[in-house]
Length: 346
Image 1 (tube, helix red, strand yellow):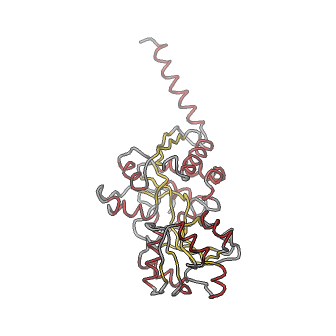
Image 2: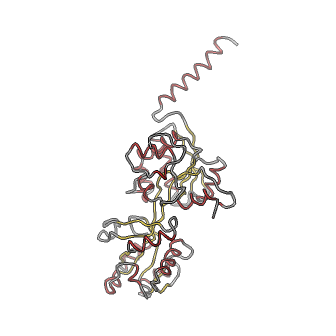
Image 3: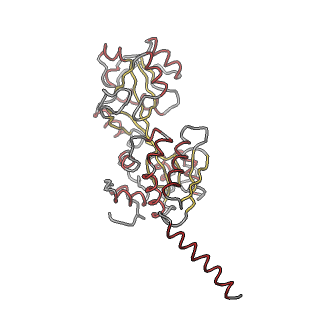
């Protein structure tokens, strides 16, 4: 082998190394993102996320892989096919870590980690405005003996409302039915309200359409009721305090306690702290673009709200790179959320 032949490859390595060193975020990284189907409205979040990361840390290449939900993505992360997923939640993480529910066949997998917020929904309790005014309906307890649709059959929203009715012996007259049936019954007055999963800061689209013909208001639970429900099931019965002005369609409403469920980006400790740190820096830089692609993220802080929406349950830990970034931004991080592999100030 001649000297020219030796110098050539060395020069190539030096040039490549110099280019990587000049990359704003760090060396090139390829990441596979577990996404929903392109036919889902949530797919826009995956596209917005990949685009924002590519723009603000060009050395990170994110490839969105269409597939199932949180448990499917967790299986693929365990197999190291995916690096992270847009379909996580504290409840999903708890099942994966313990090997229960949708992850029972795979067995417990400790490396799973929460990352940052995608969006959160509320189980919003809509009531006809005229009935609320006439009967003085302000909280869940005021619905006693009233005809009410508990939500779309088969949804967690419906299950939670029925459980609340049973726990507090409210005596609400439950009249289940499809969304179309509920809309007709609201308009004709056969029911005075219904529960419907909705974005945190606005009406659900179907309920907004109903609101135009039959004005609606929104009620919530008392703080005491919320505490009792959370005590019964800390992971499944989470709540959020919606402040006054927090519902753009009814700015006069609030503060009220509403059932909620958070969906987060989820990863594992197989992703290094350095890479996750770069990823979240790019996400924050491009959060406006992500909001434009997927409006339900608007008004949320991706890390602060993810931490705030995670229940106080053993085993709920965030990725080390997220903890590093949170510490830098002075976002309070409870010690229980810090994983054992985290390196940095406690």
